[in-house]
Amino acid sequence: MGGDRIPWVKLWALIWAVMGPCFGDRWLPVEKLSPSTPIHRGSKESFSLLLLHNRLRSKVDPPAANMQKMEWSEKLAQLAHERAASCLMDNSSNGQHLAGTQNQHVGWNIHVLLDRSMSFEDVINLWFKEGQLYNYHMAQCSENITCSHYTQLVWATSSRLGCEKQTCTDGQEKKELFVCAYFPGGNWDINGKTIVPYKKGAWCSLCTSGRAGCFKSWDHIGGLCEVPKNPCRMSCGNYGQLNVSTCRCDCLPGYTGRYCQVKCSVQCLHGKFKEDECSCLCDVGYGGAECGIKVAFPFHTCDVQIDGDCFMVSSEADTYYGAKIKCQERVGVLAQIKTQKVQDILAFYLGRLETTNEVTDPDFETRNFWIGLTYKMSKDSFRWDTGDHPSFTSFAFGQPDNQGFGNCVEMQASSAFNWNDQRCKTHNRYICQFGGELGLKTREAPVQIPLPLLEILGVSFNPPLPQVQI
Image 1 (cartoon, helix red, strand yellow):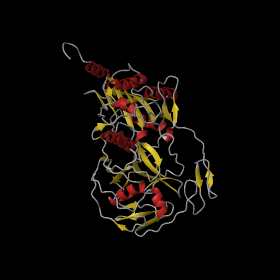
Image 2 (cartoon, rainbow, N blue to C red):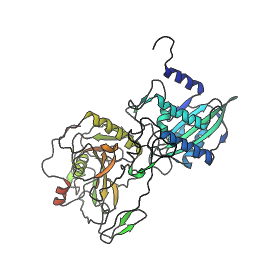
Image 3 (cartoon, rainbow, N blue to C red):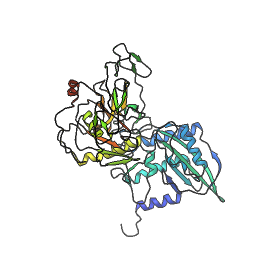
Image 4 (cartoon, one colour):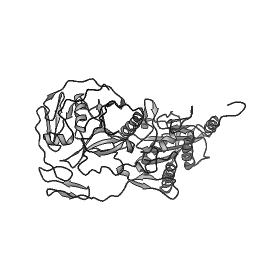
């Protein structure tokens, strides 16, 4: 760059500064503004803002394979109204959660104008234009420029939206405050670096099972993942009754499984027997199918730390039950992914790990990773290894689909590390989790299974593979 030519990035930054200060997601300075009468969104204008968000989300470049269709949320609109009415004097909503959810954060886009020269639609389009300065492959914006409004607007898993506008006064000067709330929030980072907002690929090619439909309006460039409408296609054995409202079998006493096809019993020596789970919840320091094996507290490393929990990615491969035992021997559990935040960060980390070819075990069969979710026969549903029902899932399109044969869940590389139900005898790498409330109180031991069935599942009593330092 030479002469009197001004770089286009600096010119854009200058225009941005003239138009007014903008604030994105978690970096929100407090301004001493006084609120005046709030401008409530009417249903027509709310619908217009929603349509604009979905239209812009369908125009990202490179194309998004997992971009979800947004829906309007009155709860989020109320949160946006409360924040706008405070004129940024109250930042208490920075870490806000949406009622009825578990640790799912709300994301924010905020913009302040010195006059009324722009509409709400103009402001949203301005947020989207930040994408011109965003390098998807580098997962970063141009130097000294913010793109956090753009990345939150096009965060693939943010599926609900609420916005509000407020006129604030600063002495004799009036300012327009524009606020949009997103759920689940985005702009997550790993090791101080924000991860990419979506997975690139053909439109709707990586939708989760919960959003297997592909929505495309006449003014959309690409498709958006939306909630499908699928009927039940199953029957129940052993005189079980099909609940058509939940697509689950209600089994007679003594029978369990997705189709009421299995019986189960087990005794626990140092732990609690969970009849509904057909398993033992072992006391601290004990493992094994009957909680009869004394284990010592091990050493483990932390590859990724999220909200106080440590996640360790193995370099070795094993069957599901073999991986589960190895995590228990380290006084941990197979990873429990209970929020979109954890899913996004782990998927990003594993995606980068794949390119480094960090595999030391030649017996691995796939590029996938076991997590601690299995199909529990007695509950006719998937459960975490600690017995908790999953309030959050991220199954890939068309999954789960193995109809009782693929009872163990993996993060599948070919589906952007969304989940797939797989045969438990498959050799995968795995992710152990430590810290928080996991592995510190009790741990669930593997179900006591007859030797022939253990052999079918791939659990061997031969000497284990040499331990790999992780």
